[in-house]
Image (cartoon, rainbow, N blue to C red; front, side, top):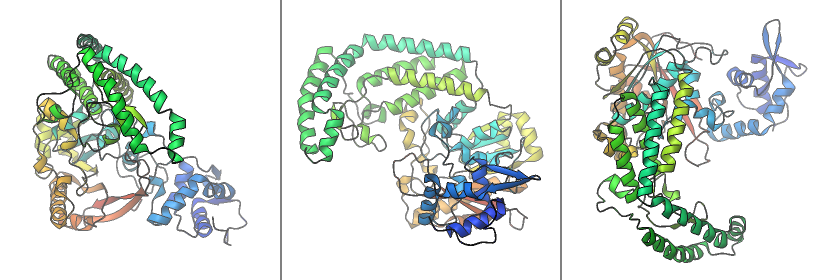
Length: 542
């Protein structure tokens, strides 16, 4: 940490936010804005003091923070990514349970942002130090790439009406379940009925007895040949050739595994392998999936039916027949025991959905009930459509005439969205199992910037045209003085052209460090939140 430089404030023990930013800039030899100091106060990293209504900061507390681990991390990230990094948007004080609160963790979804990022920009009370409020209760917020519905949920929680558009029917289903209204006693009864039926069905298939004996044999084998601490220490010391040893023990236990399969009459291979559900699930799992799905289809209550469908989909994702270290990117089906490079022992694939279905059913109920206590009566509309061409007013009118009346009168106040990044995710493919099971029509060809198109020049040109077309279409339904916030990883600097093509101007950029990442990479990484407005409209910088 650099030594304190002499400033005109050197004899003051307490300073205003502006004075503190000047002091910190000199102390760290980096640009520290008043917003950054406000963030430290807001999240309790330094104490707020006051004098005659003014907010003051104790200089010694501020110095202590910058000398701490968190302060050091902020400075380290800024050193690698630039002093323009907005640490107020790092949310480094949050635990995972806060970034995945209530319905935000109902179903896995690649590429979603944390709810706190949405709240920072759309909550009029979130940060009292912000110079301008963009959205207020009863405003209408649009997300033309709504994905799993993070923006819509946060808008509802804050009393704002919301419209979500997504080309994926399954994505709209996720959002719909999150924002639904339920008779929880009825839902609980439906869940318990299916859980009970599944337990009985699994027992009939002899899977329980097979798994119980396999677990016993496997635990004993791993305890003998892969004693956790000792084995890992030996590996670290180079005393064991992990590849050779793993191959030997994997082959040794496979004999026991095959004997148990034969003893309990358990079949794992499916006859077909051309579809996702055929290829990536053991036969025992596939039978249970079909069994549960058939019962869900018979449900009379459409809301309960949709919730149970989402629980089943979440279960499917966890029960794919693959190695633990290949969960993120599927490589080849795994239906035998194997040496796990992640857990450093012999592991097994899943043969039943019973555990995960029950766990996710309970978790879903708890999360829906938690959000129900926060949920407002604000309108929400979900449009499974192409945001480049959809008539938003007409589609909302079909679904909710009361919402349409407000929409026609006040129009959409603005947008908060995270468009797809160029060549990073195939959004339909990540939920291939759900599309097959539920029979949703896939529209991969309408995705903007999918992984399968790559990141070459042609892919980038197509991306620019696609995002610009979405903005241009949505602009027709926005209020005159709209505010648009787009979260993007713009490593190819495409958004200035996108804004120009859409007839908009970028009035501000917020560069945020991404600390809460789903992947395990620790490489410092930043994304930009672009603030767009109508050209020649006066605006305020937050």
